[in-house]
Length: 273
Image 1: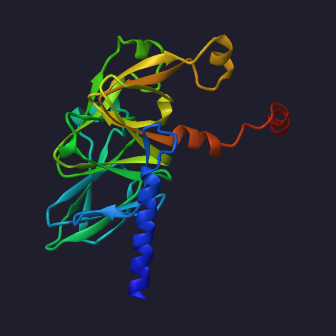
Image 2: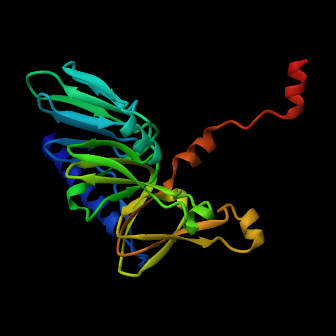
Image 3: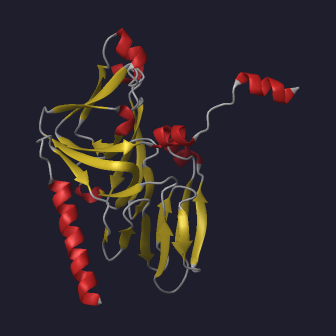
């Protein structure tokens, strides 16, 4: 019945909150629980491989990565932003060269559902609450509702660029007064760094961070570690103050897992005969 369902939901929320705030080893990291959440304007549903559903008023639009649409009301019309100026910015930021735009062309509110382009959770970032631009990893952006600008900053002469850090020389920056939705896979953890506090993170595990955080590089170790340690030549350093989001499974790791190995050379030769 309704009462039992409500009690079960409250128990689940309480348990999720307890897990999120649990830190028995005092690492300072908190688990981001991808529970059902949202506002009167939008809601994120599902525990994993989530769906973002939003209700838009007439002539109101939502922007997203191409291929994100899962379902929508018949009153929606689709367009694409392929302008040369915005295309250049998005490409430098590591995103698709175009952006899909869905507009409610009806006379009343209508719904639309969006999903990440790979099995992932959705992280909402209210840009009004962020001091300065929010820096997101290339490919992390999924959609935005309201005013949100995608820009980039470039630092081609830093040690990070010379050492081929996974964060790259071009960084994606999100700013405005709307809500940006990011995609991340696996277990997501956050850490609020104090002033001058530093952590070392795998570059591919970084989802995003406040622009107040200073990034750098640290050597992965000696010669044998560099060649056989599996972490590459360098890891990324992140120094506070600010908040950072990390993911346990990035898209490249997931794609490599599902990509079949190449056939043995002798099989290739025999099949070509």
